Amino acid sequence: MSISSSPFPKAILYTYERSLWSTVPRLALIEKGYSKDDLEMREVDLAAGENFSPAILRVNSKGTLPVLVVPLAETTGTEVDTKFRALTESKAIVEFLDSSRSQQLLDIKGEENSKPAPVLQPATIEGKALCDSLIDLVHSTITPFLLLTARSEQELDAQRKGRQGEFCRNRHDALLKFKAEAQASMGGENPRTAAMNENLIKWYDEKYQKMKHIFDAYLTPTPDGVSAFLADSVAQWTQVITILGKIETTIAGPYALGDQISLADLHLTVWLARVFTSAMRFEPDSSQDQIAALEKCVRHPFLAAVVTDPSRSIVGPKTRQYWETLKSRPAFAEVYANGLH
Image (cartoon, rainbow, N blue to C red):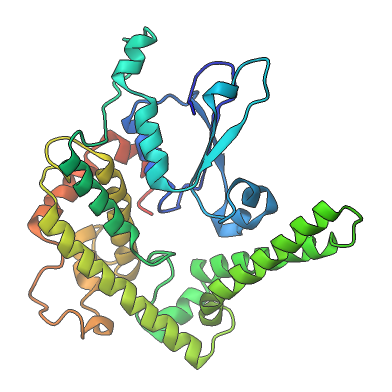
């Protein structure tokens, strides 16, 4: 597999600006010194349910982002048809981006004057194990992470009339639309097309059932649906508190593994950004102090059984300094130029 600035087919990154894990490869591209010509970026509007379209499902059968489609190096010649492989997990994508641009490769190509290409993968077995454990830690969170949570029925009701309600309606309608299109195409004579549409219909039905608890809270609320949703919100924010405690005791400082930025920092950056922006959505009067907003957010009565000592800070001193270090990176400033997400 390869990423190249040659006239041969480019790698394609399917992404969405405000997607949590899509932000990880976007940070990696900047940290690794890739140019805008090295690969093609294709925006997929998650808020409109575009990731449910048959075109995207052909690229990634899970319908999730990010996806990096890369040409296989041995098939990029002019006399053969190019074959591609899709990487569908942010961890695999950034590992590939890290290995595909190194100072050694630049020297071999005679590109000594290019932007630096720091190695983000830890050099030792112990470092890689710690790096992987931190990445797995933040990826253990419930999806969609904190995007759809509320601390009370009143907040949930307000969200139904706002962006969250619109987000759910759009995705609900997109599922039904794409399913109807597949059903309408079932009558054709081509057995292969009929089988593909049958699989699509099954996929849409299964996806709808997986999202039904969200639809039951935002679109067709019932007492049981609302109660289950609020319980899920408590579970997500409880998990945030637990993970913040583990980050505090695990990171070395100033970066996660020590003096050099690593792959772990990219994943922790986007996770922390989502935590802080979600807290500020609930506590907009915190004067843009992200940590203060979080500390206030988790002291809401809905987490009274979890935060039993209100005087104890949720964000420890190492994590506070770590967050400031992450925010000082040029890649952070570029990716979050329009605000945290």
